[in-house]
View (cartoon, rainbow, N blue to C red):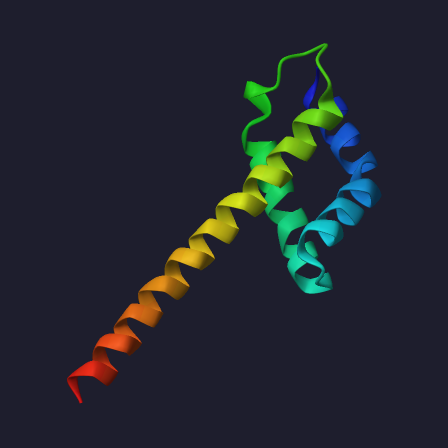
Length: 92
């Protein structure tokens, strides 16, 4: 698949990917960020796409995994902040 074909296929999915991002985030700005991050990861991983496989499933999987990883990162950060806050309150 040429780079042009790859890019065109990805761009043609924009509406569907945006709706999927909204279903995951329930927030328009977060959905836009997720869509942008998905595009970036897909473009940088073009060489990992196996031709004649399901391109849409591949793109949706990138978005889903990106959302999950971002969610886990946010949970870890909140846990660390909560621990620090709890320790500070305990020390007073």
